[in-house]
Amino acid sequence: MDTNEERIRRLGATIARLREQEGISQAVLTRMLGYSSHSHLSRIENGEKAPSIVALFNIADALDVDVKYFFTDL
Image: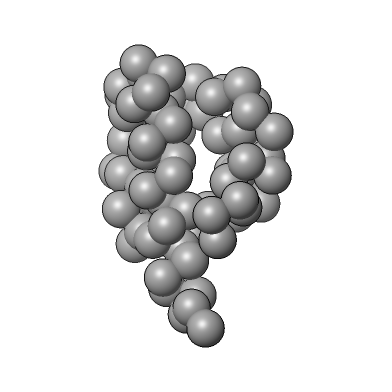
């Protein structure tokens, strides 16, 4: 069974992969999400920080996917 840390890393990797597939930089997505610094998004994508459910909904909206997309590989 996977640990929560492993799931958080995979979730972050999924966010980063989708962002890159959409051709959106971290800086652009950071602005779309209303974050003042890209370090918050970077920590999520690197699996260092779990996004809140609200942040996850916002990321899904910004990347034009249903939030359940992020849970298919967990």
